[in-house]
Image 1 (cartoon, helix red, strand yellow):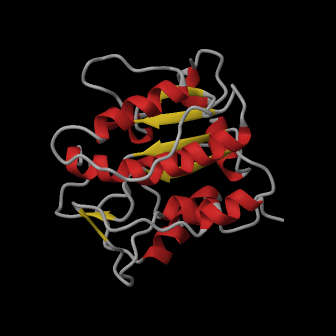
Image 2: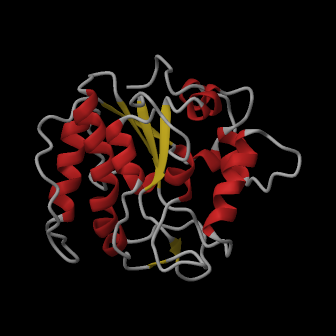
Image 3: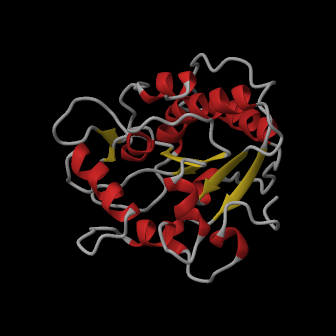
Length: 228
């Protein structure tokens, strides 16, 4: 039986974001990772959530993207996995096992496909301020329900860090700093985020999985002791 909160979050659909477009066959904005993680019943809340920037520009259907994740998780020979998926599901790493067991759920910050042909660059403040309303809802809902200081948000990529170099390791402080940034200045958003005071946990900063080459502790296991 699926945990009631995860069942509700499985049906979550945000509005279209600036700079993002729907997958080919639908007008809905979606995230293949989130859909794949919750396609089967998940009875317990995860120990952490891995957030990457976006899916990219691949011209596949939403179901094809979900199928790619399924095949990659099983390391099938005909998998169309790119370097991100190959590294996450590398049998030498604990990451793949944690994701398959749903101990770690995965989502993109910005849902949909990015506009244009540039697959990997920073999406920009306008997109990320709007996207914050999506991923903070998922992270905060689970962190508050779990109420566990050991809950971890894995923030993967430079997009997730702040220009001032002050990146909190406390989850609540991190989310509140994002909230302050998103609600001020150009492209500010005024969505109903709610209180973040009850969010407990830690933030672990990672390179994007496509860049993982050396087998450092945090890139081998989400539960590495060296992680903050």
